[in-house]
Figure 1 (cartoon, rainbow, N blue to C red):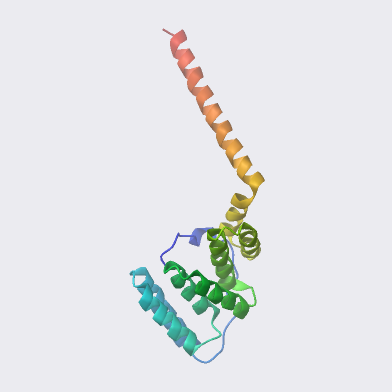
Figure 2 (figure 1 turned 90 degrees about the horizontal axis):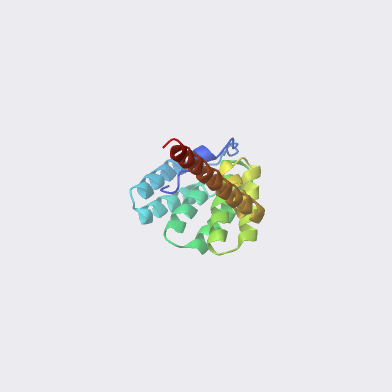
Length: 174
């Protein structure tokens, strides 16, 4: 899906549990088509593909997760949250689909200013191995934010001090 690339920030996340339901392979193929449609900018078509994937295999949490992402891109956050809840339920809150659903739902909570719910979902995703969620938890921590600000100021002071020392040395050698 066309979003911020967090693939290198995911850490070691367990795969989803194997699905042996009828239609799973066709559902996954339709999911891939849906992702390609979204990447080409045709989000409505991608939603159609995800709808078909879900119709064929309604126990596939990944299809709900992907459709939620597409719905979110269209600003349909209530529908996206419903799909994310379904993805979490189907995955029993474990595996890659659950982790991605927790992160997406947390981002929606942040969008709506509900930092407590965002923090809870980021924590669940972090517990499943998401490095991105761990970074978001630090950003949501008021003390963590203060520490980052303090470190930035200290680095700036050190840099300015080094520049002043260099300037003074230049003046002395004149």
